[in-house]
Image (cartoon, rainbow, N blue to C red):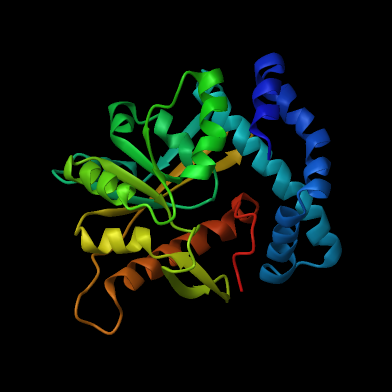
Length: 281
């Protein structure tokens, strides 16, 4: 979806009017973003088993919710954060981990509003490093920076075949900072983990789970979920330490825990999983 549209609407009309305007924007993307629309249709029709009519209606719901998430993200970065209310689950234990004497690996998903929390963790947010594919980062950074003045966290851009990001990730963890990955999006076909997800075999990026298993650091699964128009819940889950020397590799043990939690959250908010490409083969 075009970020510039939402930035312009928010800047000139405010949060509520921007939501209303989404109703005009959504049909455009359903028609003119065929790959995303096909992926969303497959998700509802074949993964969730919805009827054709129900899947068609859920296309609108899916895109509308995605637009809301983008607007909320921009609004929070633009000083509208007081418009929202927040609930935190397992937050005290999460803070104990952040206050520990180590780096922390955080793994989220293209689910809910993953970046939202970076604005509300105070000084903790300054130590957050989000690993993001460079093409996606370059596409949004200038537009968002122009309207917001920048983020409250750092971004580690990743390119296929470029190993520099590996050193940046290790440096951040060595500084006892927090490195955040998206565990449900891969860039290369060469380094994947395969596992059943929502009842069908899917492919996941190996990188986040390899880093988490080899660095011997605390691993947190984190999701920021939109509960109503102005309310979010921040949910934290804590991975068990992988066992070594068994039949299942440590990275696969972490992946299995991650999938278990992600499936639970998707069952609560299926319209908030925004992987608009063919995830299953």
